[in-house]
Amino acid sequence: MDTILEETKFIMNKYHIKANKALGQNFLISENVVQTIVDGSQIEKEDLVIEIGPGLGTLTKFLLEKAKRVICIELDKRMISILKDRFLLYKNFKILSQDVLKVNLRELIEEEKKDTEVKNVKIVANLPYYITTPIIMKLLEEELPLESITVMIQKEVADRLIAIPGEKETGSITYSVYYYAQAQDILEVPNDSFIPEPEVTSKVIKLNIRKEPPVKVEKKEIMFRIIKCAFMQRRKTLLNALVNTKVFIDKEEGIQILEKLGIDINIRPENLRLDDYANISNLLFHF
Ligand code: SAM
Image 1 (tube, rainbow, N blue to C red):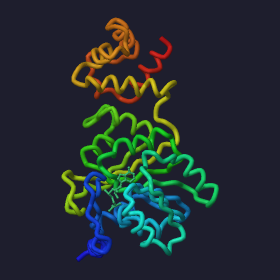
Image 2: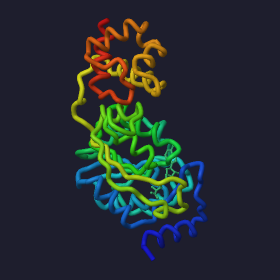
Image 3: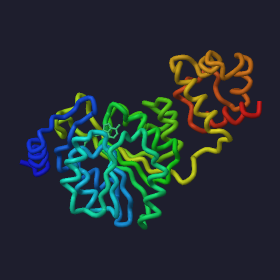
Image 4: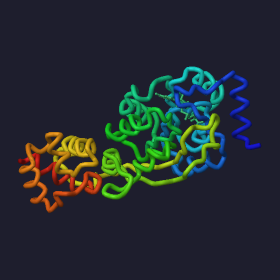
């Protein structure tokens, strides 16, 4: 039997733990998957790692061996006492008993950088699937000083996040992720790599945070609002979607803008590249 499976069963028995479905608890039991996540995150000795949802500490154990400092953020109080017991002897371990969506991560990172000489900050997590998107968007939109985000998420969401804008499987979130990061597909993970087994297939992806955005846009908030409006009606043409959502005052204005930018007036929202949306946004800003 795998060591990780044995350890997980042992800890669950010892502390009388039953996975809480509402908190997205699917504990990793595959050595191979754990090793792939740890290797994929490319942790160096001087790094600060923030782990979201450490659960029983399966990944944490490996992260603690590699990083200068590991801060875990966990909502389930039962896990907090298990983790405190399990990693009592590790001086580089810290645990916050909080909802990650409510944590001021910028402040946390700044404090940590003041106290310890950490170099890069990396996020590593087997995320709770019920809040995958809000967590990833928080990490990206707050423009935190992060180097990378290595996460296990649902395959269906992963494929949308790592798609190239303008190509297949995109959603409005594809454009946001592409703006902030270069995405890497790391591993597809079968359901029997967890207990209990999730109902969906999973994937490990890595988002390498860009130093500079890939497009020049005067007001990125306007660009993202246009993208959201376009994708609200993705079956329509871009022109109709943007007229219906009042981004363009009327069809005439829309046609004028699209023609000026050399964009086909019959194009659908998912066929535009990010720089097309940046150009529409820049033009509208001055219109
Ligand atoms: N890292 C463990 C593993 O790989 O076995 C557990 C991963 S499990 C998929 C997700 C974890 O996130 C659970 O431990 C759950 O309690 C925790 N969690 C759920 N919602 C959370 C939230 N809002 N903030 C922080 N942790 C949360």
